[in-house]
Length: 139
Image (cartoon, rainbow, N blue to C red):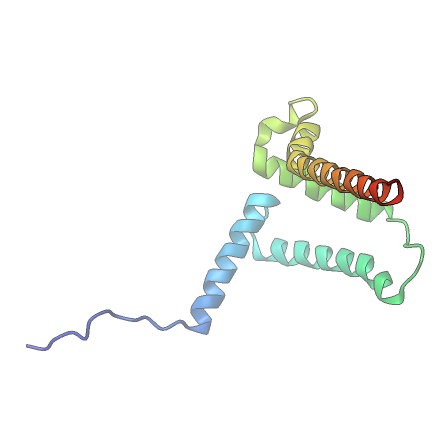
């Protein structure tokens, strides 16, 4: 009777990694934008890459004034944000007034708390520095 060597180790393969990455990417596209087809995923990726390249290209040239967004680019950005919100909150979000504002503020709330805490800490350090300077100058 043959004995097993203990734990069975599976090898990772490049093909397996590609399949898992594709399935995760497909699920992310389906959940955020609602795109199920491969062609739709390619189209959305190309649009996003072109917009990111358009926004990021002037940074390499150090232009002081970036170009204003075009009407088409702004419309696509609003559509992506709207569909992403619908993917997260469901279809009822279109019938609820100020749903986008509520979701946006709920996402900003942790950042605002951290910013206010950092501002309070900086004010405390500034007051302590002023007290130290005052104590050094006035005996």
